[in-house]
Image (cartoon, rainbow, N blue to C red):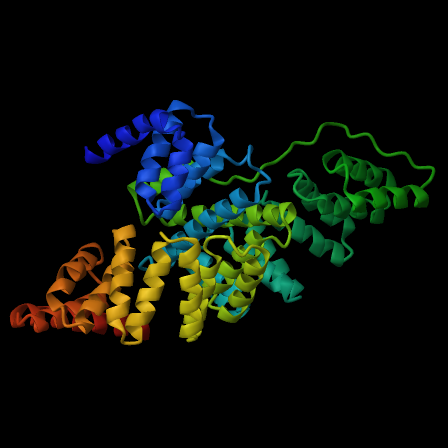
Length: 503
């Protein structure tokens, strides 16, 4: 009720102050008052659903509050009107990326031997170049569900990349028995048959692939199969069909020129009927989100949403690179991906390049400071965080990282106020509560750490470190029985974690 009244007062004050709801929402966002910004902007959007800038800053506010699903819903509705805006493309790519990572962790941590979990784990191994474990996970996926389309195709793609073509062909045959109209399985198996000079045999598979109208290369392969089978007219017709779908493709244009020069007297065949166009069947994101709200451990929904969000992130980053090549946004995005992959040296290079291109962009020095801290270069890292706070005096993350670094160095007297400021700006951020509790324990203020640790445990009951710190806090206040209880919980969680690691 108080928040609603406050929002009404803010909105009522716009006319008197001459400030639009958009300007007020953006000001609140830039002051790290994300929930208030969200309230103002949501009301403004209800008044005008078509206001793109209001929706844009509302999406940013939801993003800052870690309400990624809400942020994504708003960003998706902006895609047409802001298709080439670098800031939009950067933010949308990051939201998709974070959503995909969260879903990846949920799927990977599901209990039991589940087919989709193993298939997803194979992607993680494959992305890091670990093809042996990727193939092992796909074998586990097929043990869990031998009738599942996908794992055979994934195995074929890995084997193909390793030039183990005969093994790949066997996997493709198994996949086609399960999914006879699979685009990639038909395309790749057609390629395999062309490599074996079985041109007539390849054509039926390649015809299915071209029906999807996904890649111009599929039309080239089918045209090649026709020509090598002695049917130049069909080859020409296929190239023309490819150019109807991809009119600017240089390879198809060159292939048409080459075919005409080799067969000057041949006219393209006339198709007897319009070919059926196929579409890949991918579940709708809205339906998948609804399934997860009802069943948070829905393996199928987690798997598909992760794939959809990963593709969304990649597609928007590709557009960002085209719209603003070598921009600060591109380098910042590259740095964040390198940091996630624990390549802190590469992340530092990217963040420094982003800083060189836009020294006033909020968040760049923060990101640079964080990776410097992760490399153990505390003084450099803290210097960058202080510079960030000059640019963004309400950046709760910069206060948190700076305060935590000072506490680690044993200077809780300096770190504590930084963490308190971070908590003032973002009261729900659990890591700040944990670090501030450590600071209070260092300062001999055990009683002040207890409510913070209880709050962490309330939301994360299995938080091993929080239970240990609470044991120390109770011991500091002389509450021996409560201290013993927390120590026993900590030991039980530690034993469970060690047992899980061994398994």
